[in-house]
Image 1 (cartoon, rainbow, N blue to C red):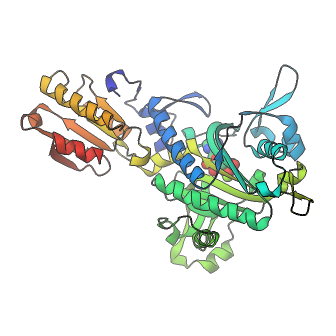
Image 2 (cartoon, helix red, strand yellow; image 1 turned 90 degrees about the vertical axis):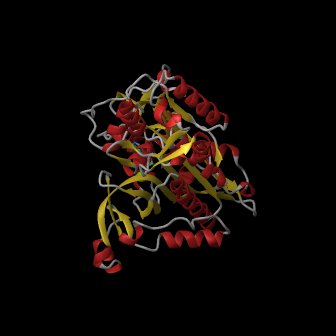
Image 3 (tube, rainbow, N blue to C red; image 1 turned 45 degrees about the vertical axis):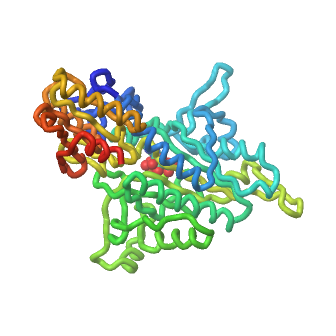
Length: 439
Ligand code: ATP
Ligand code: MG
């Protein structure tokens, strides 16, 4: 992509309405624009990151044996009346009446709809277990939308649902998702701590929230400090026993959100010096709720002996759009965003220090063509701008590898390779620079 023609409306000044860093940087880097309170349009730069995050989530769901579907944003109120949640959900639900006076709603979550799909399509215990997910926009009319995409009213969520024959099988599905979550966040460079959580309006008795420690987070957290630096590199799949061991390991230390926090237990289990009380960002939440929906909505399968068995369910959410903000909270410095490679909008940026100079233009065009040919996303700053402005923009938008091409270096066949995360710069030949960013 050539920056001269790219739709990238960056801002020089910090926008007054943004209270936290990720919100400021997303506006300044031209990633999103507010459409109305808590509702955002994603511009090209932001959309690239959103898609990268979404793709990691998708790959890890697929890897866990979860199958992708796509349910609509608009649902019928009747299904929610069946489960008994229509009245209880309150003002967070955006209720809509269609032209035939039918009550509809913009889905805040999908337990009812998926249960309806399941009960109409699955008949036998032999078809279990089933794990299904979709990545779809949700609407919750939050009292206080704030912090940009972190607490929006319209937001992108991945939600999965498991259907099993009995409690033990449902636990296996839960455990598998638990491991999938550890892997998903790890790939984004995040340490998301699983914490015992309250099941809230989704209901149920077993639930974990995945939380990233951040002072700007909205969740109050209490945990063993050993957990803050924990290593998830051994969170891999294996047989059921192996997966269970991983879950046991990552739930062995005290880690709870405020609703589940018990001061006496905290003090008993965690030595004073290791008691962390702080804040965090909830980037995922998993629930096992048994037959809460299947019973009310009559989702059954025929068991081996011919009798009807009410299926056991769980649901598993990841805040895809919130993650974009959460990653920025974890990865930024004074100059702007510092994207982890796995989610960066562009892997490489080329800065032409003197657009219009034949040698500079030729070298940049050559690099640009070769990087594109390797199917690597590259942003070429070919604008007629001061060098300082180009450096600032490339750092603001956080491109991980930057190739800096100027007339002086080129005389001896040299360009600079800069790593955004460390600020390290290296002078390399064009060839060596290319192989550095392509490897
Ligand atoms: P919160 O406690 O932050 O309001 P929640 O517990 O109501 O979230 P869940 O129903 O668990 O949310 O939804 C699953 C995930 O969706 C959450 O873990 C979070 O990452 C994301 N999410 C929930 N609400 C919002 C929102 N208003 N804006 C952006 N992401 C959200
Ligand atoms: Mg939650």
